[in-house]
Image 1 (cartoon, rainbow, N blue to C red):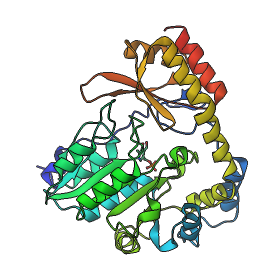
Image 2: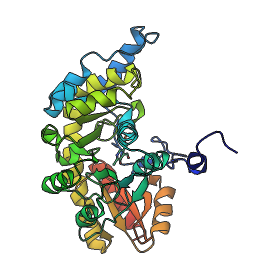
Image 3: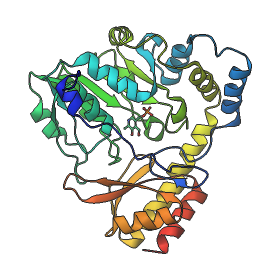
Image 4: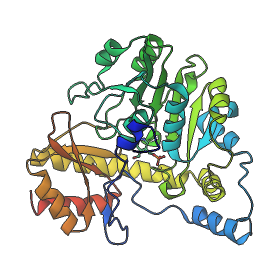
Length: 350
Ligand SMILES: Cc1ncc(COP(=O)(O)O)c(C=O)c1O
C-alpha cells in the first residue's frame, strides 16, 4: 500500500536512455542536442561566476526576462523563465488541468507531455501523426469536447520533425478557447516558426522554449514560457522563486551576448549537413519523414542492425517506433565533418 495517489504509485518513470552517453567517446546523434561545445564566452561566464564567490547566495534573476523578451520580440511581462522547458510543460499542465479532464496529445511525440498528463490523471486522447499529413489537425479538432483542457502542438514535433502552420494553430486555439494550447517551440532556432507575436490576441496559447538545443546548454536546465501576461502571472504563482539556478543565468546571459555561435551552427546543420544526409537517404532509397528540424526520422529495413553498427563505431542514434509499432531511427545532424562521418559509417553497412 503506497502513501501516494494510486495512479502515481502505478506509473512508470520517464527514463531517457542516458547510460553510456559520453561525448568524448561517442558522436551523440540521439538526443537532438547541439553536437559542438558552446562558445568560450559562455564557459568563461560560468567560471567567472564561480570565482566571484556568489555560490552561497540564493538566485536572483535581474533583467533576464527583459533580455529574453527582447530576443523574442515580446513584452517582459509575457515571459517566465523555467528549469528547462520540461518545467514549463509541467507547470502549464499542472496549472491548467484537473484530474479526469481531457488532454489531446498527438503522437508519437515527446514523452514529457504524457508523463505530466499521467501524473495529473488526465484522460489522454492521442490522434496519430502520419507521414503524409504530419500533424493530425482534423482528428484534433474532432476530439475537442467541453472536457478538453489541454492540446499539445509540438512544433516541430519530436520525433517526426513535422511542422504545424500558424493558421492551423490559431484555428485550434479558437476551436478550444477553454483549453491550454501548449505550443512547444523547443527547436525554434531551426525553424523560426512561432506564434509568440499573437499571445495577446490568443490568451490560451502557451509557448515553451529552451536553451537546451541550438544553444547547447541542456546541462544547465534553462527554458522559458511565453504567454499572455495574465497567464505568466498565474504560472509565477506556481513556479518556485529559485527553481532556475544562478549558474544557468550566467550562462544564458553570455549566450545571448553571443548569438553568432548558435546562428552559425544552425546554418551549417540546416544548409549543409541536413541536405547532405537527405541526399544520402534518397540515393540509398531509405524512407524518412520530411523534417523541418535538425533531426530526421529514418526507416531503414534493418534498424536494429544499423543502430548496433553505428554504436560499435561510436555513433549513437535513437530508435523510435511509429504509430504502427514500426521502428525507425531518429538521427540528429551535427556539423559537416560529423555528417560525413555518419554517412561514411552507414555506407559500410547499407
Ligand atoms: C519537443 C521537445 N520539447 C522539450 C524538450 C525538453 O527540453 P528541455 O531540455 O528544455 O527540458 C525536448 C527534448 O528533447 C523536446 O524534444
